[in-house]
Structure formats: C-alpha cells, structure tokens
Image (cartoon, rainbow, N blue to C red; front, side, top):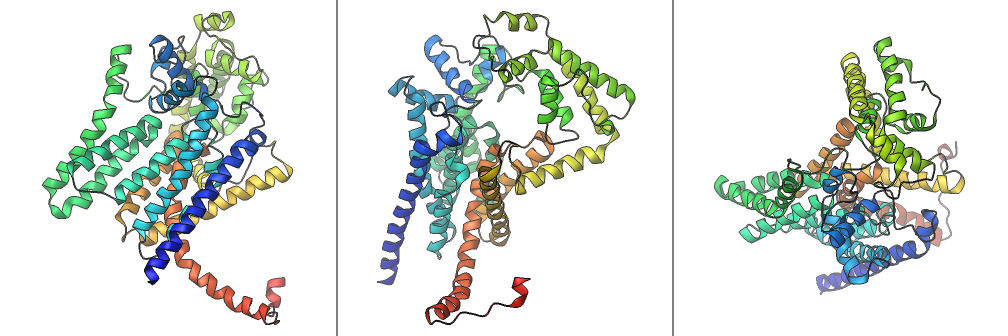
Length: 506
C-alpha cells in the first residue's frame, strides 16, 4: 500500500511542479519580458533572431535559403533546424503573429521539459523519488532558461533537445530502430545549435562502452547504426551547400555570412582574445575611440607589432565593411537593405577585410609565440572563472537590478558546484553521467581555449544538464538538513529558544 501511496503523491507533486513552471514562464512572457528586455512589443527579437526568420522567409518567398542576398555566405550561415521550426509556426499563423506564437510554443515545450527532467532522474535514482522532484523543481524555477523562452532563437529549443538526448540514453534499447532514432535526434540537435555536434562522438562512445559486454561486434554495429541515423538527416546539408556554393561547407563558415562579422572583425577579436577574454572595450575603441587606440604595452613583443596594430585599426575603420556595419548599428542607423545602401556598397567595393584580417592574424601568432604561457594559461583561467563563478553585470545594471542579477549568478554557481560534486560522486554508478560530464567538459574546454570569449548563453545546455547530478546530491543531503532543523523547530514549538554560540556573532 505504501509504494502505491508514494507513487500517487509523487504524481500529484510533479503535476504541481509542472504547473508552477508553466505559470512562471507565462508570467515572465506576459509581464516580465517587456521590463527585462526594455521593450513593450519587440522583446521577442535579439541580435540573432532576424537571421533565423529571414532564412526561412526568403526560402518561402523566393526559394533561396539565405538571410542576406548581398552576402554569399549567408546562404550557409544558419543551419536549418531553428529556421524551419520558426517557419512551421509562421506558416500556420502568418508572419505577423509568428514571433508571439513561437514564444508561446517555446513556453509550452519548455514546461513539458520539466517532465523530461523528472523522467531522467527517476531513471538515474529510482530508489529516491525525491531526487526527481527536486530536479524538476530546480528546472521549473531555473531563471536562466525562463528568460530565453520568449526569444526567437535557439537557446530554449536546443536545451529541450539536449535533455531529450539524456532521456534517450537513459532509456537506451539495443535495437536497430532505437539506434537509428538516436542518430536522427543527434542530427536534429546539431541542426538547431551547431556546437551540439559534440553529442555525436559522446553518444558513440557511450554505445560502445555500454554494449561491449555483449561483444565488440554488436557494439560496433549499434554505433554504426547511430552514425547512419545521424548521416541520414545531416548529409543533406553539406550536399545542398556544395550544390549551391560549389565548395564544401560541413557546418557553416567562420563569419556565418554576417555583414557585421567579416574577416577583419573575426581576426581582431581572435587577437584580442589572446591577452584578454573581454573584447568589448577594445571593440568600442575601434568604433568610436580616438584615432590611436592605447593598447596595453605588454601585448606587443616588439615596437613593430605595436605600430602594425595601429595601422590595422586605421584600415579597419576606413575600409573594413564589418566595422562599418557595426558603427551604423551602434549609431542607430542600421542598414535595412544591403543591396540598395550606397554607403555600404561603396565600402564593400574597396573593402580591405581579408588584408586587415591577415594582419591581425599575424599579431596573434606573434603574441602566441612570444608569450605562450599568457596565451594558453591566463585567458583560459579567466574564462574558467567566468564560466563557473560569473558575478559581474553590465555597468548599466546598478541598484536593485544589479544586486538581483548578482544573486542569480551566485545561485547558478552554487548549483554548478553541487552538480560537479554530484557528478564525481555518482559517475561510476551511472554511465550516462559519464556522457553528460564528457559533453560538459568538451564545451567548457572549447569555450576556455578555442573560442576564448565566453558568452553565457552558450553554456545554457551545460548548466541545465548539471542540474541532474545537483538534484541527485541534494536528495542525499536533504535528510541530514531535515534532521538538523527538526530539533530546533521542536524547541521553538516548546517555547525553548536554542542558545546561540558567541562565536557566530563575531
């Protein structure tokens, strides 16, 4: 009787948690988002949204999949997952209602994902249902996913699919059909967010290790079927790219076809990221600063490098098309039609993007050769600190809003700490946690050492996956916490106030 009663209680509690999560997302969408994003009507869009929507709109209207007809690489700048997710909703409700409809669909999908978290933890810790309830509650109330639900962008959908991947691993079946289905899911993850391609090798390793007990031949067969399912969906993308552009593009070009992220911009950022993980002050200087930027003297191995840097900055300002587009946007004069904007076309005709980018690439190579320890240690350590313990906010966020954001980031860091401890404690017992930890570790290493300029939204999937081991650890700690508080509560009810040690008052 007791197990049946427990299941009944748990089912009611998870419904309450899902409803709570749904209400929080609805309230944020209706009330919070306009205030948080400082826009009463256009809060659905951020800087990336138009590239997703226009890619579909142009395909729907003209048959050409691109978000900017003036940039050839824009035809391969956005993988098709999210644009066609948006497009399906846009076809059903029309272009005017599509942004709001996408937000509501994401609210519903993400609320349903609370059940995925619950299901994952029921499989991970079947003997402790409280772990599943704690994990569901953590996800239902996690602010860093809630704030992305109204945005037309990949963050919310990619996170939901990442949790679906974990759920698939936890419910793995050694059948051909299931293996192919997992491969399709991996390709879908990739099509929504390109760095989720990491899930493919992680999943293949998981399958090999899990199935090796039955022999290496069946293990290799199932791994091959996962790869086949992945290729079945994925290969259409590079084939289409080759037919369209007559060159091999496996994912997307480095600059993604963005008019404001051309080679000189990309290489300038890469050079700056050699000695700092925050390029924004130097970006602002190149856009609006004095004719001669005052770079730190210790970033130049020689005086010739310092002089070259100033020459390249001057070039970037005068004939770099990427910085021209950024300057127009910063001055609230964004280019609405690249094909007809005469100033843009003039600078494109004489652009020095490739030559300037090559110069910044030389500066980066010289810095890396002269200061290898600084290059491979200092910036990655700063990125590590930001990844795990970010607490700073924008300079404009002061007062109560600033304190709220710092408090939320402290909460995030606490959950990450619990997640890493839980991951290390339960790694041997739960092979799926090895897959989760491998994925998180690869993404972290990529951010620290390769990308080098950390954007917190790129860590959303890793943050959410770490809620799983965090909930597992919390469920073990909870009985100890309850036992500590129970005597104090009993004493208060009896009218006895426990003595407070003097040491706690110092």
